Structure formats: C-alpha cells, structure tokens
Length: 154
Image 1: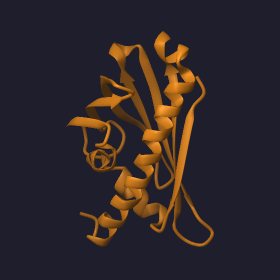
Image 2: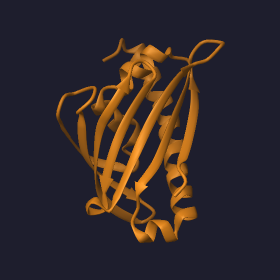
Image 3: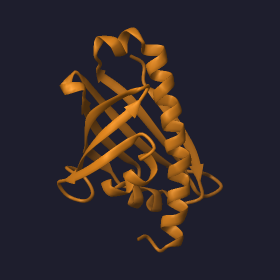
C-alpha cells in the first residue's frame, strides 16, 4: 500500500516542535479524536517511549501499540505501530523542517509495512480515511504547539 503524508506549517522553531513531539504523552492531546485509552510505558521521551491506544477509524476499533524506534533531533522521529494482532505493522515518521521565513513545516508520513487483506483490498478508502484523520491531527498539533509554547513548555 502506498504511504500517506500530511503536512502543516507552524510558527514554532524546529527545536520547539521536536521538543513537544518527543514527549509521547503530548501526542494524546492532538490525536485523541481517534486514538483513545492512552497507556504509556518506557521512557517519557525518545527512543523506547511507548503507548498502547485504541484506534477508532472507519467504523472499527483496534488496539495499537506505538513505539518510538528512532530519533534525529530536531529533525525526525520514527514510530513503529503494531495493530490487528500483529497483522498490521506500520511506520509513522515526523519530519520537521525549518521554513525560510521562520517557523517549521511538520510532515507526518504513515507507511504500511504489513497490512491485513481487508486493508489491501480497500486500500483507496483506507488511505483516504488515514489522510483525513491525519490532516485533523496536523491542525490539532498546530493548536497544541501554540498552547504549549505560550505556556512555557509545560
């Protein structure tokens, strides 16, 4: 299946964006419209930080484990997502790039490494659903970044 990428430009610096995204618990703030029941394990930030969540998309619910497997501050965070009892494995990659006029472009790419047959058969609909959900994620991320930075990084 082809990957899905969404992006948004924000006024925060790459360092501010990375600092926020590096904390796994912060992800709940901007993804809780479709990822719920967050339970955290491992370190609070960086490689090895994990969350177990319930994803509700396209009329179905599934348990998902998210683990940060690679970081390159302040530019990149790579997550491994496992769901559907291991039949679905994906990578989520945040890329943070400085904009020439200040601020940052934040991109998120979701790539299926392994997908159940139903996902593959319905690939256009599955990709469209993920794109819509992740566009909302990016809009909510921008709002949360503004709140976070204006509150002094709490």
